Amino acid sequence: MRPHNPARAARRRAEALERLGMEQVRCIYCGNTDPLLVRPRRIEDHHIFGRDRDSLEVPACLNCHAVAHEHLRDADVPMACEREPTKFARAIFRALAVHFSLLAKACWRFARRMQ
Image (tube, rainbow, N blue to C red; front, side):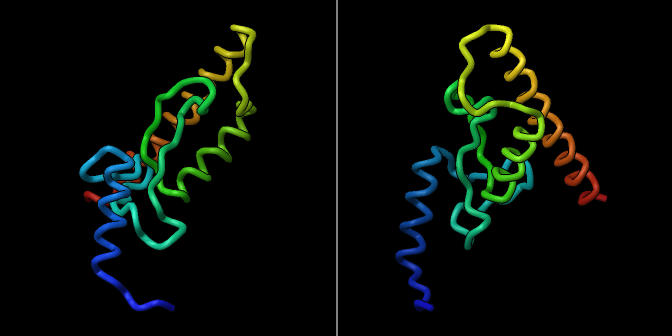
């Protein structure tokens, strides 16, 4: 294991924050705030509707991002963009349902922590 280099860590953190466009990045689902924590907790962009459908994205750690995509697969949300308007709308509504379900679970977790 390489020794900790504070200068490199600070540079990586600054680059990650610049890439994500925020001063303090927080996973929308679990609240993680460190974009450079040792894998698997790195922060990245999650496209709520899928990268091909829309550019709306939220910050998510790798764990929560993987969970979100697993829920999208379970909800039969295809990752490729559909051409037919009805299938496109169905995918958007299912993706929103997954996102809101994950947000609701996160809200309950955050509320329990405040007791």
